[in-house]
Image 1 (cartoon, rainbow, N blue to C red):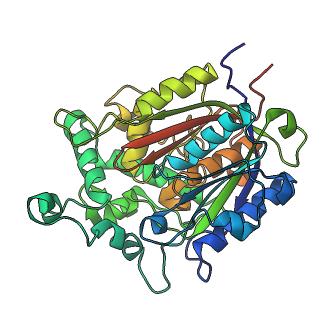
Image 2 (image 1 turned 30 degrees about the vertical axis):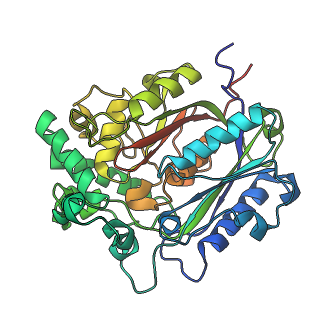
Length: 399
């Protein structure tokens, strides 16, 4: 029979706005556009929706962004499930997980999960878009502010330290990280929605400026304005809806806790280990069964350590595992086939999920992977602090 929740829900709608330097709309307006597009994509009416889960981006952490008022903005009445959620980049997968459990429990029928953000300002840089939150002008002073005074603040620093730790322990090289960036750019050249569509070489990677060693500019994700919404529905309704259903075969989370605690291996042992055990166990599979990976890639290093934690290779062997280009087009483990967050667009956890849906539906056009029976998608947040995963399939998970 398998796990009770395997195939308990399906993704039936996908709505996406244009991505990147898109100006003139608030995060709420972008979210509403994506929700309406998802409803139309699924062939539903607004009155069919009885659940709404909302994930704000960085603008939601700085006093703006989408909030619970999105329900009223959309004119949605008599909702049976509403929440405003944030576990950083793991939230998108978590929203789909909670929607699945709510549907299985009879609490809702069609649940919209939406992410929206608009940190980019006209004339401003990508660094400035995240800089205000990263610098945190209200950070503590005195002894409590020593780490920030020493330059340890924002997202880049902990990820750079994590990558350096992996290099020191296992001999991981800059070329190996660069191979990930080059492969994902190859995928992005085939994605009309991708922000970065010009080919790059390993030489281009090395020539890109340092952000914080060992991370080059091309090791780091984009910043984007935009929104993505998905609809989760019961499996018995999904099969007859407008789009090919994408069934949820497995899901899991892993949150390792305080990564600054003494003795912690947060740099090299992420929550992916726990999430993989739960998600693969629910789906009744192992890493060898996965056809396509859509992995959260805020940095190249995040891809490498996630592959290790999901058992695609042993711990410490991520560098040699990726260096033959197997993640890129024509490789044996197609990964981040829309360009990911490095070259496609940065919608937090909705970036890998949106591409996973497109691949599982068989609608990726030039970049479509022929065998896509099982697609793994992951979300990562904080400094490798929060993690969630989904195993998706075009085939029902229940007999």
